[in-house]
Amino acid sequence: PEAVRLALSLMASPRLRRVRGGALRSRTPEPGVVKGCLENSQIKAVHSTAYTATYSLDQKIYFKFYLRPSYGPHPEVEMMQYLRSVRFPGVPRLLSTLSWEHSQYGSMALALATEYVQGARDGEVFVLEALRLFFEEVLVSSLPVPQVESLNPFVASYLPTPEQRAMVGRYTMEFFRNLGMRAMELHCALESFHQPGMAPEPLGKNYLRSLYQTMRNRVHRIARQMASLSR
Image (cartoon, rainbow, N blue to C red; front, side, top):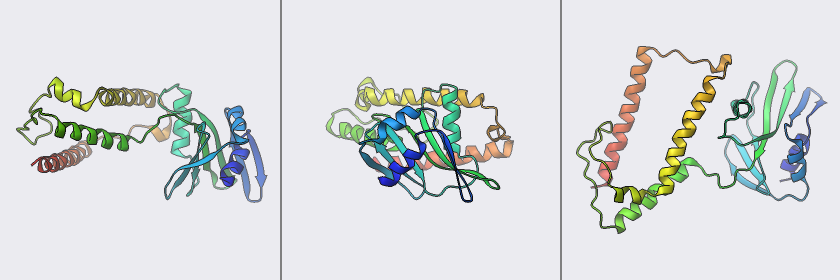
């Protein structure tokens, strides 16, 4: 926690601090928010991997350390800055970033701080929980299990009844509807991102054929696994 507090104290105002071998640069679009959370704030570890460690400060600031930084633009920082500049609604406010700058090698991102999003959940955890609740509803209900006539996932062999849709839950259905809307808005925002690193990659026939076969094989494999579980 003290290392987090020290890093945030460096990120509380936009400054360039020159030290031996380079400089620490903090970019702080909203310094007042960071300064206001430094005193008497409770720091709580949220999640850690081999690459990042994340913390929350009084559920107001979400702080992330990059444990294996490398020189060059960081995609997360760069993408958040751009998406906020075009007012994309699906990202939190970027409060501050901390980077190391070298005269020869350039800069590397060390940490970033964003607003804390209340109720945010990991998408995979949400879907697995929704599936668990759905299967529990199926087991306790007297509704017949729909019979799938074909393992071809690209052919709709049945349409769920209103009762079966109700077992999925309105909140879950609304989640996936909003997820689709956000994906569409994200693609529209990225389409206007005119940077060399974001230029569309060429899509040849061989690449498209390989992509289609990979997706088809993966979907068929999952369909077979689901069919075997229902027996």
